[in-house]
Amino acid sequence: MTPPYRSEIRLRLDDPAAQRDVIALGYRREGIARGAGPDREDLVVWARLADDPEGPSPRALPDLPGGELTDGVIRVRPVRSEDLDGWYELRSLPEVVATSVPPVAPPRAEVERLFAYAESRWLAGEAAAMSIVDARSGSFAGQIALYYFQPHHREGMLGYGVLPAFRGRGYARRAVELVTKWAFTEARLQRVVAGTAVGNIASQKALQAAGFEVEARQLGMLPAPDGGRIDSVLYVRRRP
Ligand SMILES: CC(C)(COP(=O)(O)OP(=O)(O)OC[C@H]1O[C@@H](n2cnc3c(N)ncnc32)[C@H](O)[C@@H]1OP(=O)(O)O)[C@@H](O)C(=O)NCCC(=O)NCCS
Image (tube, rainbow, N blue to C red; front, top):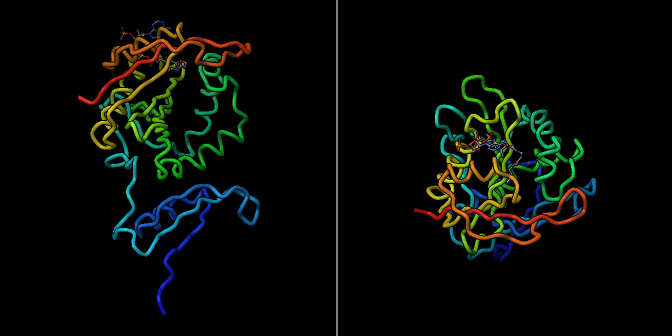
């Protein structure tokens, strides 16, 4: 009997180990089957065709080499459940809410879901969500993510925030430098961009210190907490 031309597997979004197994077998991610699980949870659809190439399927966002990036002062690594309280605290701060899209404080359950699905999104090549850790104390200091919305252009977008107790020490600049270097060398991106609200001087200085330059002013790009719109200054760094 001839084997079937198409083999399909549906997996839970919070089961990255199973997704790594099917990636190793050459399955490709096709999308999300909404509410398809037994408890009406979303499932990820993976499939392999008989004439797909042998070996693991390609990943747009590889794992961090050795599991983390470090410059000796900070460590940047994928989010872990122990970071959840710090993440929730950070995402609830008014100045962080004001720079979030949409500009609303996420309920705790949303942050928990974000953590549960973070590795799935990384494996999907959609986003790499990482925590910034103070290397000396091991404390959670902030958050940085690389969103890969434009894979065809090989352009990624950064988002980040640092807890007030760790601000002004260069942690944002260091995290931006580490992640941008990884994006160019390991993920082979050509452009890394970051949009900052016009008045967000701290973020703009951190980007400039990390070698980014202003590319454009995006009119009314960002939704404001009061329902209005704010201009964004778009920064870019190109692959050397
Ligand atoms: C923006 C933010 C991430 C900066 O974090 P940080 O770790 O304090 O930044 P750094 O220490 O790397 O500072 C970078 C530069 O900004 C300067 N800076 C820091 N805070 C500043 C402030 N409030 N006003 C003006 N400049 C400031 C620093 O002096 C430094 O400049 P230098 O390189 O010339 O010395 C942090 O303030 C934050 O989390 N803000 C709220 C969320 C946010 O705005 N996220 C970014 C969205 S685009």
